[in-house]
Length: 85
Image (tube, rainbow, N blue to C red; front, top):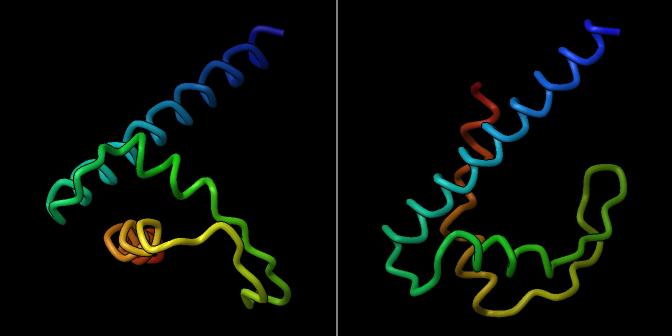
């Protein structure tokens, strides 16, 4: 019982640290790009986009607009770092 509780707490800490790291990176990239929004607003805007994906290909996007395209272009390199990590 204690081991499962310790694992549960450990995984929550991991997710918390990961979320804070993503938010910090988004904040830095948005600020450097000169966009007039903060990381929470950027993530909220990105959350509006929905994608239909099949066999690794995006078939359809919904909810995308010009502001979201700017945010995507600013934070798009984040995925590149995950490939090397």
